[in-house]
Length: 178
Image (tube, rainbow, N blue to C red):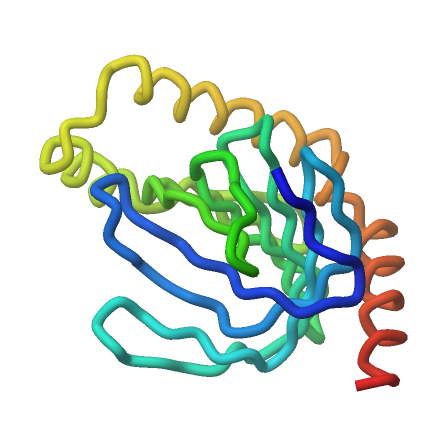
């Protein structure tokens, strides 16, 4: 698999299990990339929904995508601290200038004090039935919810405030030269 180049802009494209494009983030700057992990950042980027509506993000965000985990993590830097939005998703692929993944509806919202809540279980159950998720996929997704909660409790990986601050500083250096 090709790896995006550090400092370069890419798109992020979210799909549903049936292959339908769900949501696109117009521009995210690559901060670090390997064959198994991509970390990007954006601020005030346009997001386009599958129905054509669009909106602009409100705060800087550091985004983590993995090829070995069935989730991705968006770390949002707000005035009251770092908030996290975690999507239970397929591992990403990078092609045609975009990080692409399948969004499986289940989300974990994490607050600055590291408390968290699981979201969208009803939406997951609806799409699971509509799109006939196989039982093995259901097990993988719920196992990854548990793995994600473990990382949150340990404050490891994308849940390290120190790491987010370092990556945000790197993002700011790229923005100086835009």
